[in-house]
Length: 530
Image (cartoon, rainbow, N blue to C red):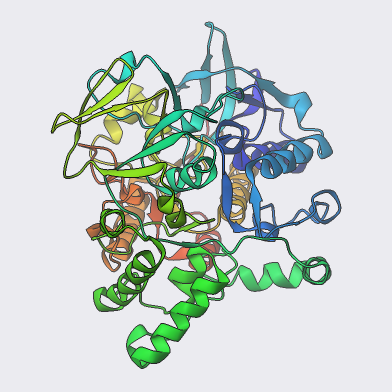
């Protein structure tokens, strides 16, 4: 066997998995990454305006005190180059690079029942074997391409935001952008001042609130550094760990005037999670409470956007029940004479012809550059693109044909010894600390397998079914099923319902993991070869 463990992907999850398995368990571990650098999502997503929407001091590994010395929290939110720099420094500080192969794509993995190990297929035909595999493929990393006739024949410059070329320029160009999710909102805000003309092709108007980003005072930074452990300990008792004080009052329990004041305060403070979870505790559970938030944000759009026609086009009609967005002046960009918005739900894109986007009514938009901010096939998208064959040769695509199912978001039945990070069924929470929980559990399960002198561990089908039902029940209790959100895979036409998250949040998920430990890992079966 070539290795004890192989890790696939060098983002937050993969780097931490390599450190845990190699340094703490003493496993011969190697990591393969298809990109030419570490960073995962933050290596690929170099588009203008790319920024985390989680507070700077919480968008990192919680155990990593060295971050306080090596990575200053200058602003409330970190920009992409700062996050990438943090991850590159992390890899160097823990000497991880010696066990990482960059620019190597993993094409598939096949379970070898004779040897209780995985045969990993690398690009170019090379194969390596390992007892255990950790797939850290990323929650949001499989780009979703729009199904538009002729789009591949566009004669101008076309870029997907998740594959943004470093030499791309937009200054003085006629630019079109398809997509107004989180990425689209960031790109539009960043490039609108510099383009000759920007045409925003919008299918779904978005609710977005100000990010409130800006430079922190020296005193604020000092307080974070002095109280680092206490801050993390408090955060880890919350649902989301996003740095927003979570509300414990209902939107129905206050007067209309008080409700308006609370919304105004959150709008002024900034932050999407602060607005959704810090104002009232029932915005994602109760339709009337949600309507109050909708009405407030719509009133802000009317105030900000001076052109009534543009304002109406930008007005969301759906529930405020997707991942909450925040921005650095998104709606204000539509007050520029060089920025237009096209409602492609009312007047869809018919095709792309030469350098022009043609609408169904015959309208023609000639462009020098077309930006695709069309998001990702989230959660299981990365698993379905590779050849992954488990017990008796079952393919992951067949096992998940009716929707992805895992136990705890870290293991599927019929796939022994292969652990997943951020697969469907993980907690809806700030990614780095949620990743730590998952990777720590994976390390424990591998250690338990070795302690039992077993050669294989597998999640029981009953545990997978139970976890899917738990996630389904929690999701049904929210307004999410009524929104066309990537959280449920609804952004991919024809895709079966995919429960990408456990909506109980971080602290409850932590409790579930403790129950699994206390129960002696009875949801898993352990095998001894021979």
